[in-house]
Every structure is written in structure tokens, then in C-alpha cells.
Image 1 (cartoon, rainbow, N blue to C red):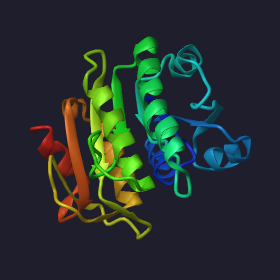
Image 2 (image 1 turned 45 degrees about the vertical axis):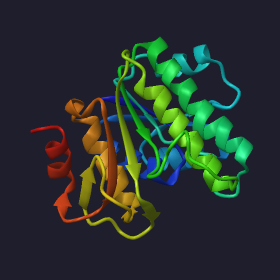
Image 3 (image 1 turned 30 degrees about the vertical axis):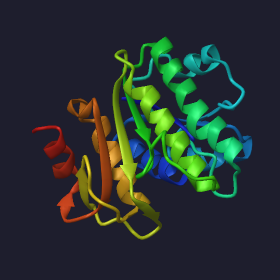
Length: 218
């Protein structure tokens, strides 16, 4: 498969790119900083320069032409203000979905966040982040032209992945290594029967592949 990943230099995205390359898929990472190109190549991915905060739908769609799937894994990141939570975590996610539709890429996976809610209350930057993620998720759910899956990990850690998770519509809060989030994404990409599901992910006792097959009804 050819899989285009928005936020291609993110910590989860780089892990996913390595997994995809290792199994023979073609990973393409969208980045906005040319200094990150070497890191993507080291991960086995093709870097594509495109700033999702300023690009048009047509520009992004051109990068998605011929892809089998799209993954939105971009984020404004720690230290960013509420305005960039809106322009990246919400607006860029909507733009990427628009572009996927334009390019005819049906399979669309979103890396969201546990607690994402367009009606989340609060004035802190993290509150704005959860609203932005929730609004982006809502915008994706309304699209019949996309076979979407929304993945909402718990508290992300840099611990080594165990390959054992809990993946359900509602898991309750808990930590999960970024390694295992990437592993879940790789499995979801190969499991189209998970389309239409919003799933929470934390560490657990079930192998990733088994957990994904279970939520897919297999």
C-alpha cells in the first residue's frame, strides 16, 4: 500500500513509517521543515514538503493522488498556543480530509486524543486542544466519502512498546507507549472493517493484532 501521513516527522508518525517500510508498504510523510527530510528517509519514508497551515486543498490532494490510505498524525505540539491548536489540530485535519476526498482516497485514519470533545469546557491551552481535536473528529465522522477510523490514545509515553493493548470504544484513562500506538495504526490500515469506528487505546493484555480484529468483528 501507499500511505500518506500528515505530520510525518511526529514521534508516532516516524514509528509508523518504520513499521510500514519494514513490511513493504510505501510510506510518504508530509512535513513542513526541510531539515526533517533525512529523518524520514532514515525511517524508510518518502518526505514531501507541504505546510498544511497554508496549503490549498488542491495542493494537498496532489500529494495524495494514487494513495491507498491517509493518516492524519499532525499536531501543533507542546508549547504551541491555542490559536495553533485550531489551525493545526482542527483546520489542518479538516483540510487533509477534504484533500483525501478530492484525491479519491477513501481509507482515512485520524490520530486523535482521549477526551477530544468539541464542547469541552475550559480556557487553558489543553482545553483548546481537546476542543480542536473534537471538532476535527466531528468533521471527519460526517463524511460518507471516507472510510474513516478515529484512534484516541491515552497518555503517550516513550516506554518501549509491549505489543499488548486495550482497544475499545471506551477504555477509561491510562498510558500507552507511542510504539504501541504506531503498531495499532499499522494494523488498522490493514483492517478496513474498522471503518466508522472511534476507538480508545491504552496499554492492556491483548496483542495489537488480536485487539484490532476483535473490534472489527473478526
